[in-house]
Every structure is written in structure tokens, then in C-alpha cells.
Length: 248
Image (cartoon, rainbow, N blue to C red; front, side, top):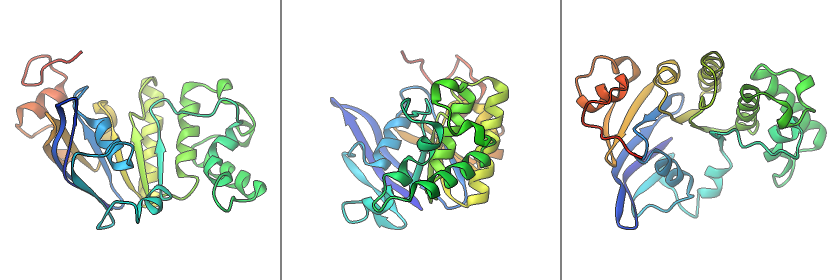
């Protein structure tokens, strides 16, 4: 579904991505891990077209992603943002149906609301939540609304940006289970960025470790604990000792 070939990006002469090659398949959740400042968010922004890479290519269904097919790609992705990123001035159901109501042509309001209620039910939220506003929801509920919005338009690709940040361990587990179920049930291609190793083990099919601008390691999630790579072992263990230098 998505393939990155030799992706490079620098800022002010400082390289962030140094030739990233990566493939994300339909029906799997590819989780990208890496230390703070390793370029995970830059990688995601390059895929979405928010940042133009200096070199390399992003492919969508085998074709180079560019002006001819970017609109098609953007119409077929959904995203769960790190902070949920809900619109404070809109009730929950309009947040979920935002894309449907603003499409050309737009879905009729009654149909859009019905779709929103279906998506809310899928993430475990009842109809009574639909007319509340984001400020009236807990952090975990806001994340679930964000997830409902991400799937409302029937995407083929889902992006999850630090989906469990700021959640307690129980709610993080709930969100992870919802993500895993949605990726499996919808058969979408998913790319997740996170540094939460508990979350990685719950939702990942394959894992890629980004280090010093390159993919240092990639493999099945089951291999995380047994691979001898020193960078991977340090990151998985969360050890201050090793080849990963602290940043910030």
C-alpha cells in the first residue's frame, strides 16, 4: 500500500532522514519506534505531503505519490492525532462526521449523524455522548472519539501518532485493543508512531526502528525481545546505557 524509497530530509543542513526504505502492507499495523528526535514525525509528515523530502520517493499502491494521485490518497486515509485534535466548538458527532459533512458532495446530515453514531459504537461510546462537547469528555473518551473520526470515511490507510500518550495504563490498553481490532476487521494498512513498548507489543504486526535517520532494524513484533542488535535492545529495555545518546 505504501512504500518509502530512499527518503531523505534535512533541516538547516542537519540531516533527519538519511535514506529511509520501508514498506507498509494492507491488513497490517507497521509500528515505527525510535528515540525522541529520531525523525518519526518527519517521516509521517513526508508521507502525508506536509513536508517535501529532499530526495527519495513515497509510493501509493505502487505509483509514485505526486500531484496526479495525492488527492486520491488524501481521500483514503484517516488519522488519530496525539492529542485527539477535536474541534472544541462542535459536538462529538459532528467531530466524527467532519469529513463526511465537508466532502464534495457532502453526505446529508441525517446520514452523516447515523454514520457517526455507528463509529462511536464501534469504539465503545454510546449515543448519549454524541451531543456532548469535547471539553465534557475524559482524555480516554476524547481519544476514542478521535479514533471514530479516523474511520468514519472508510479509509484504506490509518495513521496513529502516539495513540496512548497521556493515558493511564488501563485506558492505554483499551485504545490499543480498539486499534488492533479495527486494523484487523477493516483490513486497512496502518502505520503507528510510538515509543510505548507495551503498546507496541499489543498492536504491532511488524516493527521498524528508526535510528540516526535510517531504519536500523525491522522485523516481526515477536522478535523484539530476542534480537541481539544493541540499539534495539537498549530501546526496548529503556536503558540509559548503550549506543542511543540522550537528547534534549
